[in-house]
Amino acid sequence: MSKRIIEVSTDVYAAIWASRLAGENSEEEVLARVLKVRNSKRSNVEEKPRSSAGGGVYDRRNNVHFDEGFRIFRDYKGERYEAVASSGHWVRSDNGLKFPTLNQLNGSIAAGAENVWNGSWQYLNSEGKAVSIATLRS
Image 1 (cartoon, helix red, strand yellow):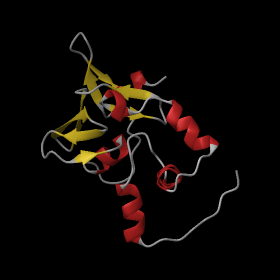
Image 2 (image 1 turned 180 degrees about the vertical axis):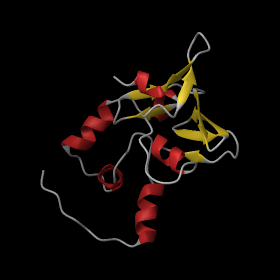
Image 3 (image 1 turned 120 degrees about the vertical axis):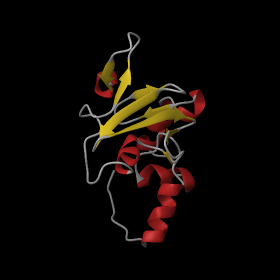
């Protein structure tokens, strides 16, 4: 598939991202859905489980489904931050703000780009031990 570059204003770009559904991780996927364009990349996304269908959050890039109510946490600059997977979003426990992706959640806390799978975000396993979410990737 050939690609083309288009320029849009910041407002239009923000509107595209605001229109995202769970599992959509690119402008291409959002616009393909909105414009009802069927292509191989979009149809592959539809075949995978969607977080809105089963609750929780689905990370398509890493093929990880966080069940509804799944809790994660991280420490940053001496503060503990927690979030819960709910209806396709990560919801911060401290302020209730919602984020469709781990990267956006993390960006609301830590300054600068950061690999969210590097071990900063953790969860409590069945034995109550803090474990990196990286262990959940396929």
